[in-house]
Length: 114
Image (cartoon, rainbow, N blue to C red; front, top):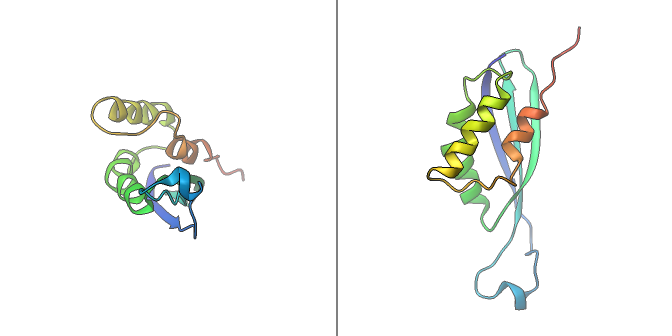
């Protein structure tokens, strides 16, 4: 089973997480996001995540950095993919190890039972 499709949706919040006194001049909407991967066998995995500060920036990061890492890969290579994410984070990109969104997509995948 290979990952053939990666989609994201950003869900805008109408207000910030913090009050104006804590937010200051930099609004922090903390939008929500939904990610979906689809395998060659039609199995789907979904994950939700915070789109911190900017849904547009989070979405661009997922499409520009994360998607190329997972598209075309075998879903069984979860550990290798996770280590690729770790290497990206430690060698030039910002992808906090506590941000489990892409890993959750992979862990949400289950083999279809007949």
